[in-house]
Image (cartoon, rainbow, N blue to C red; front, top):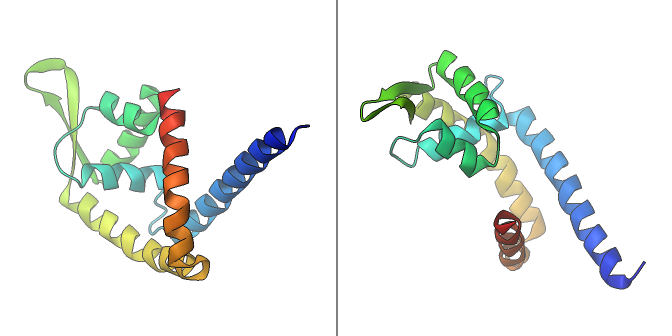
Length: 144
């Protein structure tokens, strides 16, 4: 195996393992059995404006069916409102509800200490140095 192959494998191995560990920690601290996908959707919707389920599915790189499942759970919890699009009856529009805003705030309050502790342990300079590389990797992966 060449050094470049070993480097690539090490990079992706570290990223995948870090992803699994981070998801496990987040799942433990999120309130009211909230799932990471629920928090992510609420966080996106909190930035304002309505989104279609298709727009959300595309943003999260999941199928429409997976997004419909997540949105159904959020609607049952009272965290989102789903309404018909008055201009196109075939589409629906999703917005965050006041209860969803409160749930997002509670989730942020629960995860912020863990994130701040991690950044503190890693060192702010290290995190700032790593971000551009991780961001560029994400962009390249999104481009396909």
